[in-house]
Length: 100
Image (tube, rainbow, N blue to C red; front, top):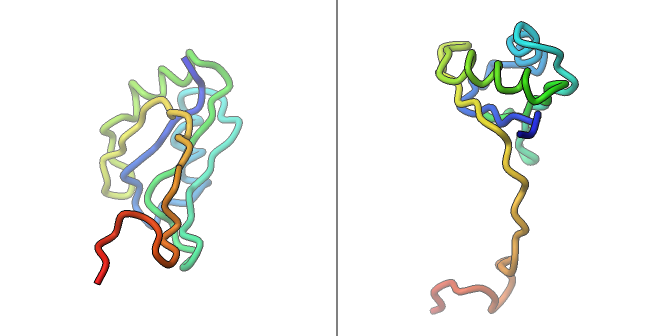
């Protein structure tokens, strides 16, 4: 099992420090990142936490999945590798969009 965790359904008020503190109670946190919107620089409501071992990651999932932080029930599970995106782009005449 990987030791990188996906954390979803975060409050927009939750900070990286809040995230680190919540997970530190269940092991050593090596990294905590909130994903930010590029346009507005506001949090997107999810992030990733990396624990030092897969055993600590499993303990954190068991303890924090469904637990409320800042009024929101967290979704915590093993992070999946990012899928490669293909095609699209939305340029002139591209994609499968309806045309007039």
